[in-house]
Image (cartoon, rainbow, N blue to C red; front, side, top):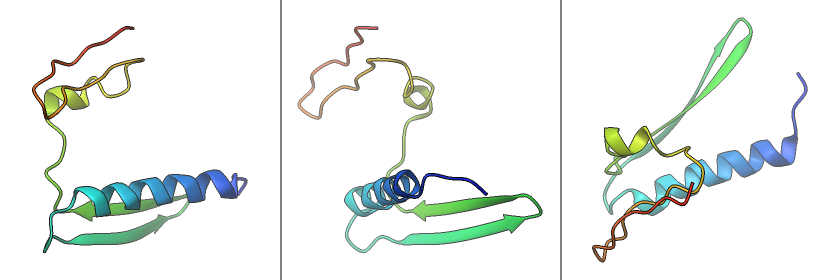
Length: 78
């Protein structure tokens, strides 16, 4: 297996940090690792609110921004 160790660490750190940040007090975070014949899957399951289905469709659009909690509307300059 060839991989970039620092980038994998950065990815795992970002995923776990997001779970810690958005999971409410008293919530749960579960980590798991599943192996198969030629692949591994990291599973991070938390009790954070999650992402709206419509928003999830746009998350990877260049320059897409969501609305802020203050009521500002989302904008996209892409």
